[in-house]
Length: 379
Image (tube, rainbow, N blue to C red; front, side, top):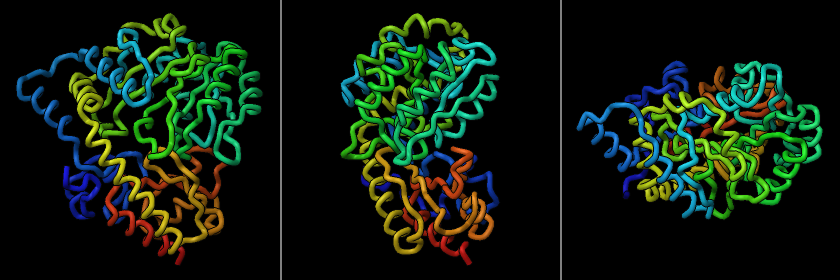
């Protein structure tokens, strides 16, 4: 592919995008918030979905090809041997999280999370009427085993830990040693680890992603995977729940009807992504590296007070804006005075005062304009 994937102009994006990212705010607001890319589509996905529509193949979903395509992808990319016969198709990752919580815990039981973390973790735990227990990341944005041990002890046996791997919004990639220690700790406290690995294919060059279930110590865990972030198909929702070797019976406690919600066209799209989307993923990953460097250069020049948290994955930058003196929610100042929408850090951690999240999966033009508007918001 010679054309830039992340190259659409601001005018083109405003004219063609109708998703929540581009329609939630007034038209004069530049959106760099919600985690979707401003990307040109992956041709194999377009071809697969278009062909299905053309032939009237719009019935109920059939998941084995999706599971097989992901198993091949995981084996080739990470050496993770996935048995597709034991993977369970789901409507999407977070619906899978909710169904697992409902099936494996009781109202009032605890779910542990490690903020700052994906904001929907908070909402889905609340929606299931479970008790949220926080085990914050340490000052370096890494898992704190002492804090986790205390949280697991407080949560009690039979509780669930929602692992974000790679971690959103910090971009932290947990090491094999950290994940092994986590698995050992979880087994000791009889806590089920459910690993959301939706950003895994977007691990940066030079960093090594370790699938949680690829570790011998993690045999009791469950992983949730999808191509929605890596191939920008959030509008074609489908996901897989993959059990560890000793968690097949545990995952089997989900009712059979749970898998009925996966959309057939989404399953076709996800299958095409994992099967044939490698070249597109390689190109967009290279462009994201360029964008990450550009964002760093622009912030260093225009807003040197902002500190970018070191990241090893995702297309999201976690910005420490405290030195700007904009109060607890700098994103509110940026959108009100600069007409540029970042995500509020408080959504990912009520204690993350002064932080914001910037989505750089867009064109260089949009990144440059966003930083200009952030600078202008300081007045």
